[in-house]
Amino acid sequence: MIRPVLLSCLLAGAAMAQTLSPSEEIVPLEWFETHVEGFTLHFEQDGALAGSEMFLPDRRVKWQFPNGMCINGIWYEEAGAMCFAYETGGPPQCWHMIRDGEDILARPADATDTSGDIRMTRRTVVPLSCGGPALGA
Image 1: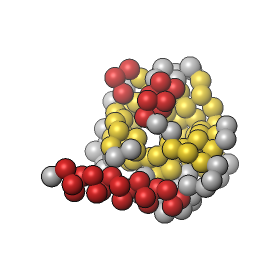
Image 2: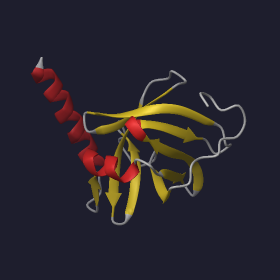
Image 3: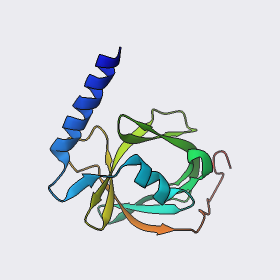
Image 4: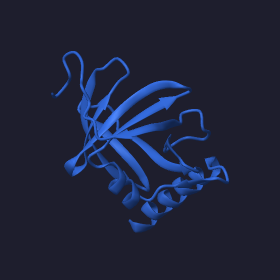
């Protein structure tokens, strides 16, 4: 049983290594956890707001879409990726957090290129202000 799990982890790591540029490194789980709890991270993709995520105690999160609507969820580590499961019940979204110089990127764990990257633009202590009928609020 251990061999298939180890093999899948090695294959996932090898696939991610193919999408890293020489200036990029995957952020360790411990670093990520200590730098996000109690903060709200704001992300952009291609210069447009992708959304914001507030990191609460016990690995709970609240994601805010660009339209102001929010959903609650949790995050956990799986095979070296940070995975997010939201109350909407869809499949978890797993990301590798990557440091590129001073920038932090989130890249889909199954990415074969950088087209799905989102860039952290700000880290604040300001809680999210969710608009409309927020799910789970």
